[in-house]
Image 1 (tube, chains in turn blue, green):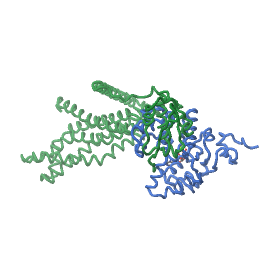
Image 2 (tube, helix red, strand yellow):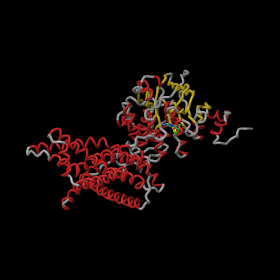
Image 3 (cartoon, chains in turn red, yellow):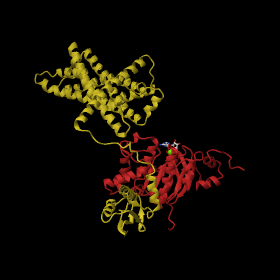
Image 4 (cartoon, chains in turn yellow, cyan):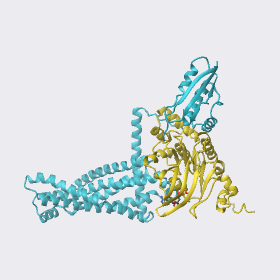
Length: 256
Length: 380
Ligand SMILES: Nc1ncnc2c1ncn2[C@@H]1O[C@H](COP(=O)(O)OP(=O)(O)O)[C@@H](O)[C@H]1O
Ligand SMILES: [Mg+2]
């Protein structure tokens, strides 16, 4: 395969709520087929960055390029077209509470494909089965557990086989086995469908299991302090904060 | 997304007597039309008995969920017919994803049945539901009374700031709409009355008509209906949203009674504000009558005022204020009850608000009828 352009390029990105700067001067690139992790402590702005990437919140400064196309400078139609290639799972699930799980997953299929109702039902069953929720089609979000809502959110994000999947803390609140299964699913979707994944997470086990690229956000300096393969970061990073994070706070473990 | 319509290709052949070779090629993403597993079925049924199915996917250019759903269906059909499906020819990723999808068995017990019962049993069910809702309502009124008694004893707790905020929302902020509506009601009453009374040359009695009807019932009813639509719906939506977010459960776990913490301040605020609003509405209604009287009937303002003062007694005032205090309780109860009964979805919040307004208005009218009859019997 020929060398393709980076899938997502972030240039000098600054995110702020009003005058309150959350993160500034972010630069990173995400290649096609990357599983890209956004790491950092709670409240450092991971979800905010994700909102800029998925087109929900305009950055205060900087650019986000998709295959070379600058998203926030593009025409609204172009933005819509780009956004339709995304699948997004929100931190709180954000399932539509008055629709069943099947209807939640089916909505985008009904809007954007020519599938027959029967085929939509099959695709919906497949997506729910992939996240381990077979048989819960007719349940409402309030009738399933929090972890199941998370997984249903993942199923909804995958509905259209998007080019890029954004997951905001997918494994928070999941039992270890479901969490492991979700990691397998993420790897498999990348390997077989070539989906690019952007995953906000601080689950160490899954960080090392799935990630091949990452950015580490620091709340104090309000910018990124490391990026790259998390396994390499663990082995090579000299930054004590990064190291502390990746070893669950075992300070000085690397000092000889 | 430019989802290209799937230009899938599928062809069949039989390399051996008992083997079906399915050749899949082209684009198998969802988006366009997808092939149906029925075609495989047809192939199996035509010709001698098939023992196994093999796949050739060399020509496959692109695939996604379209291929997966197709394969799952084929595998399902074949397992029922005891036909072996050789997965060797399939893309590795597809095989793995199918394995992930079947890793967690389907929850059989959880499958819900969406069937509707026969007509008569549905009537029965809604009757039972109705009687249950009446019991719930009575229970709610009981709880509210208990909470009120605890308040009188100084044991109930709620946040004073909540109370003040609610007073502001259902008092001052309701003034513009109450002004407009009661002024217009006064005007309308005066107009309709004037047409009849002028025939007898008794225009001056327009003042009595407007004064008594506004002060005795109309002022209270109009503010009641306005507040049911404005504040009752707001209460239901607020509490309903709290119910959806499990905020009310969070209060309960802290041992704080939602009845005291949420319902009492709202009810008190409304019971305090309704009579004041009613008084204000009375005055605006009389002003409306005055406008018609002076503008159309050639009465002087002083004449109109004197006639109003002569005919409207203090008794009328008390009855009007009593009405409005009762309506305050009813509107607050309806709003809070429907809010607390709310289900856990966005549309349930909408239903709760609608139901609060309907319950509020119906109970206002019923209460008016009862109070009027009682006043009649007592001769006041
Ligand atoms: N709507 C908002 N308005 C103002 N500040 C916000 C808003 N949402 C989040 N924040 C602030 O932005 C910071 C980062 O939030 P968030 O991106 O949700 O963090 P994370 O996802 O990393 O835990 C927090 O300090 C939070 O207080
Ligand atoms: Mg977050």
